[in-house]
Image (cartoon, rainbow, N blue to C red):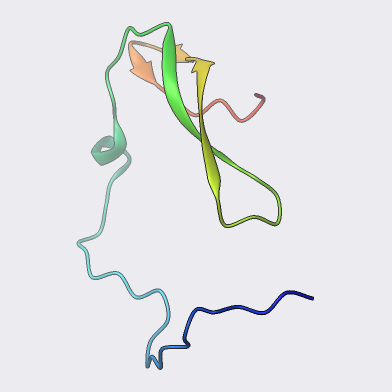
Length: 68
């Protein structure tokens, strides 16, 4: 097993994000793009890739396409 050289940092609250309550409309993203830049998460890796993928547009809005 590899040794990490990243020093541990103490914390009180993990993943605490101070924000207002969001509505679905707050995440609406109008688009007509055929291709979009996507962050590709690699299983078991901290590093990600940037890929270009076909967009999924529904009623003029860009929506998640989890089938790709």
